[in-house]
Length: 187
Image (cartoon, rainbow, N blue to C red; front, side, top):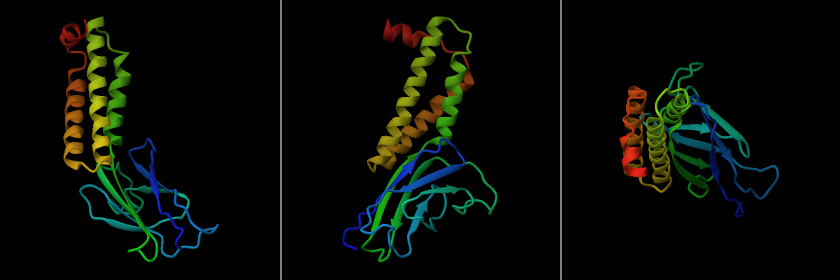
């Protein structure tokens, strides 16, 4: 068992309803012989859950399997910092931990705003300003993910909140921007 190297990766589902975790561990035998493979997942705002984990497989989780909702009821998973701990027996020897910033709900809102951009009937300066605004929002989203990946939850949450607030303003103002930022800063 000394050759075991536990590792997991979070695989994007591009779906606000699901989360997927892939076991990418190295086991000394094929098929792997492990005891009690378990993953603990801490969803922001909810209690940590411990769930059986399928070895060397893609594991899918939804709000009901994460015990956020009743069995059979699925709701969008919250954005925020998620922590994962994959263990096998003995768990104090064999474990791996990961932390990610989930931004799927914010990304879905961003995608909707982005798709509306080409449908806006604005002058060129305003369209360009909208592209600058969306680029800035995307930059904050990516910064939030990077901060969480580097164990900086305070910065991750600040950048997430900044992106969310900017995106709400963008969506609520439709095409009401002045274009001045582009004219002043980029011409």
